[in-house]
Amino acid sequence: MPFRRVHGLQIRSYESCEGWATKREMRWCDACQALAVDLEPKFIRGDELMEFFGAVQTGFGRTVLDENDEYPGHLITADRTFAVRDGGTIVSTASSYAFDVTVPGGAQLPMAAVSMVTVHPTHRRRGVLRRVMDAQLDDVARRGEPLAGLTASEASIYERFGYGTATFTTNWELESDYARVQGVGDDGGRVRLVDADTAASVAHDVYSRASRRVGELTRPAEWWPRLFAPRSKGARFFTAVHEGPDHVADAFARYTLENHWPDGVAADVLHVRELQAVTPEAEAAMWRYLFGIDLVGTISAVDRPVDDPLRWRLPDPRRMRVRQLRDHLWVRVVDIAASLAGRTYAADDALVFELIDDFRPENSGCWLIDGGPQGAACSRTDRAADLSLSAPDLGALYLGGVPVSTLAAAGRVRELTTSAIARADRMFLVHPSPWCTTHF
Ligand SMILES: CC(C)(COP(=O)(O)OP(=O)(O)OC[C@H]1O[C@@H](n2cnc3c(N)ncnc32)[C@H](O)[C@@H]1OP(=O)(O)O)[C@@H](O)C(=O)NCCC(=O)NCCS
Image (tube, protein in one colour):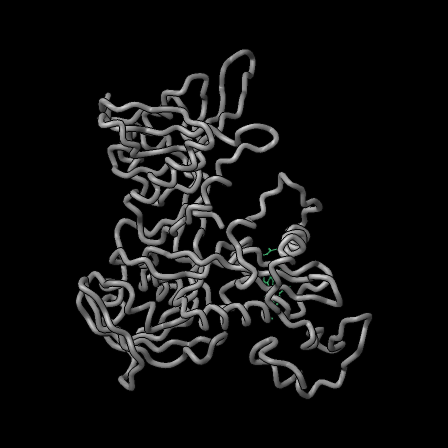
């Protein structure tokens, strides 16, 4: 019987299944609809990238792939890219970028940023994704990358593979009548609107100097030109750059204006796509500029932190209406010891947790974290556990944005020794809250 980990623990029932049939070039089991092993995820060759991107488009329900479509051929490499073929046709895709993520304490750990995950509608719900996830996490482990991360099209898919929601973002709206930044006057700096080429280099520079929160990702140099490149319809957005009195750029904002003129009254919507700053003062100065743009009725911002300091600068903060609070970065701890020793902890303590990892059972067992603000060690242990949790819970709490006590209150984390949850909260939590603004 050629199955490996298809449908996880149900594998035994397939081994005794006798319903195998051959249909066209694909073999599957009539009884359980699981796929046979010849639909194996394999790395693509470099000359198969365009075919791969075309298959990704199909997986996301898009029909075309032309020169104006965004495909990150400059960022992905064939050796991190999987395809499943049925006969000659790609029916499933997955790749990952080699990024680093900022973890508590400020270290940047390698993270496989998983992307372009699709299974074509012709092959859905037969275990193809499960096999792709399995092959990809094996590859991440082989590369020695301690973490994997992704942004999910649907929040119901990835927990079974050990991913947990680690960062959240908000989208908000503010009527321009209430858009004032209190306590911020002329700082002696200036704001310039720059073209795409300048924007790419200045934004890269500001981003690399920005006071980056836990959860943010490194963006390689190749990331930026494509982000700002004009398309056939013209520049994608305005890029404003703030410079201090010394003329050094310290903030940028990408934004668009959606024109509205109902009954002759100017009521544009200013969409703020991204705002990054090196200091809180530069950030406030950039908001001051954006709030001053004429003809605007509403300001709408996406991907802002859940604890956005801007709220505390507004004269009427209730007017900042949060339209969406949503998950952004999902984290999968692949190498338990390296990941947990790679971050610091807010309080000195030693805690043992029992990990239940159904998808990568080799990770299951008891682990000791002995750490504090200066550093940490993590190893397997025979000591009795203080807490019991599963792999997606570990992913959720790893960056320190999700309290262990919240997961316990939701019945997900079990406390096995007195006060272990409170101790874990004291160790794991970070401020300000983790935040990731990178879409990948
Ligand atoms: C999401 C997608 C990749 C799933 O692929 P698939 O091959 O059908 O998934 P599998 O058959 O391997 O399913 C594995 C498990 O995930 C579950 N699952 C799969 N897709 C799911 C979804 N959208 N919502 C909830 N559960 C889902 C399956 O029920 C199965 O559960 P089980 O482990 O309890 O048996 C595929 O439907 C797809 O390509 N969708 C459109 C593109 C997309 O959203 N990609 C994800 C980008 S982040």
